[in-house]
Figure 1 (cartoon, rainbow, N blue to C red):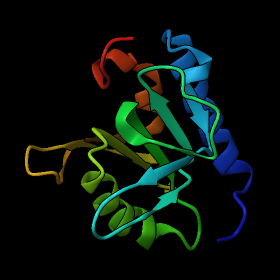
Figure 2: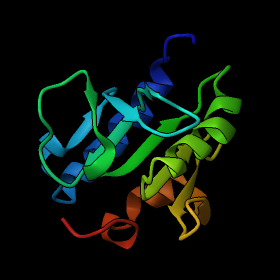
Figure 3: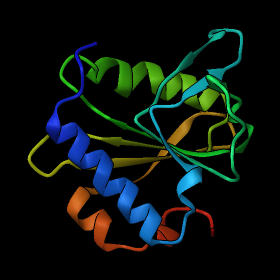
Length: 144
């Protein structure tokens, strides 16, 4: 994969800051941390752009997903198919409750996926990043 560019970094920074300002502790909002994806189809890991956790995680290269509340991926050139198809299946199969995908279109559209009872994602909402940043994270996430 190509290295993320400055737009990618700016999107990640804005999301991180919004979660922080909403009351999530900084040590529960992690950037580029490895998550272990167990299961029959995948026995490896991914490194999402941002993750939100229910508690402080132990120091480790690969973290268990049991306390993972949200994964955020920012689409980069060359990663669209992986982010929009493969990771959707992998994260759902791992039981990750929420997956946000940020497109690099003019609106920087955020697609919010929520895990259904059949361990597949339903699209809960789709909105421009600027609009999402003006809403309360409590509208889209569990309470801090």
